[in-house]
Image: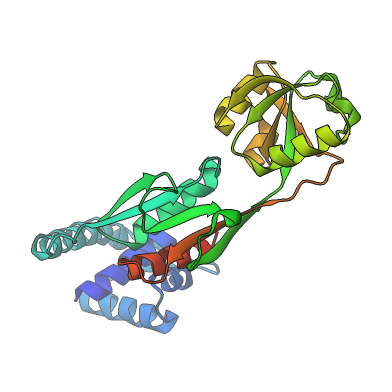
Length: 277
């Protein structure tokens, strides 16, 4: 009996089938089957009843499972006690505002899991940093980049606003429409230019910098605001979103970095994570 056999046994017990355990362990299915047969032969018992779909542990299998888990846990504790602590890696990541909580959380979670000892510092994109998630228009000369997301913009309206009955918002609709101005925002700059061209004076009720504040003010009925078309914005009870007849350029977000910066391996890992988003 060895630790590999016990590990395969535990995987089959928890996955409920030999094939699922093989996929979970990333090994060939015959290897798992052979390890189980050897274990059963050595112990002189049947550990699993083979079913048309999967397996079911016998009474002996149930008993071995608890013992195997204890043994493997103790082994992992011994191995961990002799491991050197991971070297701390301080990594500064610059972020523009309004990136979307859900997708940023997923990206940073994956990045952190790939680098043991990572000490991540989130900073403003114009501060010294190892990499930046920015609008592609903010790229500096010599920076390389990995594309991340493209964001269209919608107009967020209070849930009971009359314009919610329309499929699209026209330029005429902006006459006397209370607005929440958010800067910096390329989409707002485009909208302001279009309003000026149509001789429409924007009725600005608030001037803020974050999407969270903009959404809060929209939900409170203070005004309407341009927001990125995040999925989370579509399911809010206090507001609705509508596209504009005016075509607004999408925001192109990228991961930017200097090819000569010191943490090249960490940046490479972040790029690989970014490609999966």
